[in-house]
Image (tube, rainbow, N blue to C red; front, side, top):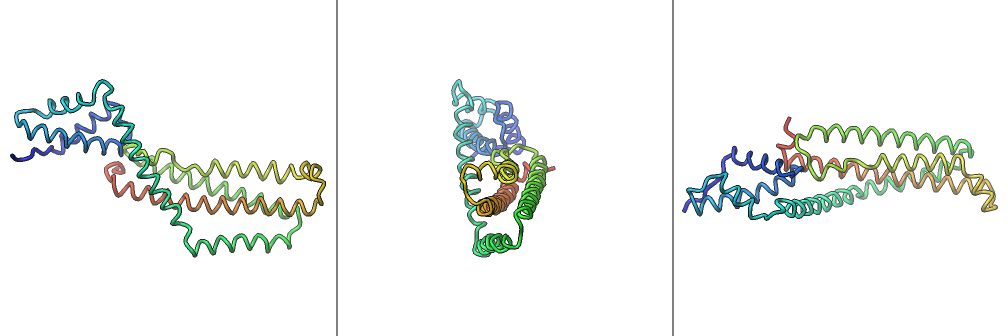
Length: 240
């Protein structure tokens, strides 16, 4: 018995059927459409007189009164696990030896230049770097937002977007409130030498900035890789 295969038009109808039944994300739709198509082809192969619409309704009836709700949850979990694992692998792969050496050089540079700067100069440098970091994160987030807008169908793995601007703003506020304005409050509490306390706080703030910057680069790298992989796997979703 020759196996029945669905046409492109019928596959397109399955995508519309999924959208109609509240399957919002394209990558989840792909998983579900593949499942539906196989089940429908099996029914139409077993019963050649069965129409496509009747076979679809029969398969959908098999999902019960809850419809696609359970399968949406399971497919979403599957897609989440797949892309979360891939994102983590890309994130970790960013920290290769050349970049690790670069990270150490950045930290060494902070320790080197601080002795040539007064406390007020350190504050200006730190605040300037925090502002530049914040601007860089806003630019990158806008770039990713624009790229996500190009996606014709929503992809589950891209909806969270790029979250580092939130962290950079938190760090910026920390520099303003904790380092620039709040050092004397902590100085009075600790009763330590003000010079020593300012130097320690400078190192803490600079180290935090370097760490966030490197994590930001790694997350940016992983996000770019994820979007490229998504475009490779789901070219229809990125079609203009």
